[in-house]
Every structure is written in C-alpha cells, then in structure tokens.
Length: 176
Image 1 (cartoon, rainbow, N blue to C red):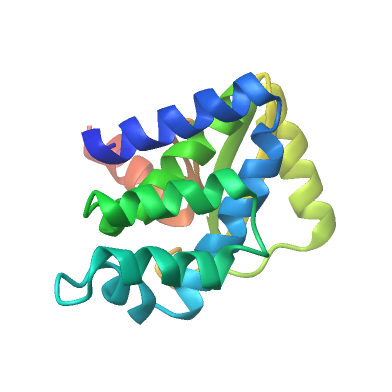
Image 2 (cartoon, helix red, strand yellow):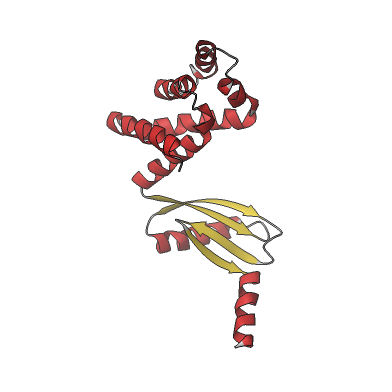
C-alpha cells in the first residue's frame, strides 16, 4: 500500500467504523470505482492542475452527491483538494482490505484453464474457507496460461494445482 492511499483509507475506515457504517461506505466506494472504471478520463479531469480546485470539487459533488454516502463524497473532495485523487483506486482497494479483514473475509483469485462450473466453485469455496478459517469471496477467471487445473491466490498465498506445476514437480523427481 502506498503511504498516502493507506492513510486516507484508514481515516475513512476509522470514521465509518465509529459511525457503524463500514458496509455502507464500502458499497458507496464500489459505486465510485465502477464509475471511474467506466470513465477513466474522469480521474484525469479531477487531477488536472489546469482546472481550479473549486471546480473539481464541485464536479465531484455533481457526479456523486446523490448516489453515494456523504462521507464518500467528502473523501473524494478531500482527495481532489489535496491533489491526491490519483491514489483513489489504491485507497478504495485499501479500504476494501480493511473492511474484509474486520469482517473475517478473505479474497481469493482463482485462475483456471476453463471456466469453473457452479458446483465446482462452491466446492472450491468451501475448501478454501476450511483452509483459511474464514469466509472467502472468490473471483474466478480462466486463462490459457493455465494448461490445466487451477491456481489460487488467497491471503498472500499461492495454491498451485495447475498441470504446469505438476509437470514441473514430476520433472524434478525424475531428475533426482
């Protein structure tokens, strides 16, 4: 985490925790993230030194004032006024990490050779929850870089059940 994004995320999380609205803020941040991803030039606009801070702050109010929690609007305005809006993506990610950690939820990224069926996803999720000892949110993607099997990234660990890994292990055994 960059120090700036981490500080902003921790401050917002502490405020949300104090107010008992961490989930509401999390949902609002997801809306902001979705909008920024749909309109990537908007962050460039909000970061532009050629546009007065007052105008950038007003643009945030117009864009998000009615759709997200007021603390998130204030958060975005603060990032604009401190010329730190470019760290918004990382700050949202950092907030999400704090939110999930406080709720005992791990985030897993699953990469497979072919799309997983819903029953396979459920079995994998149950297995990961038993390994991690907490609830798991899974993001499943498929990639041709995985020859077969799956690779799972969860809580800073890599669980590699790919065919490539098995072949590598077999090769090491043969070479001994």
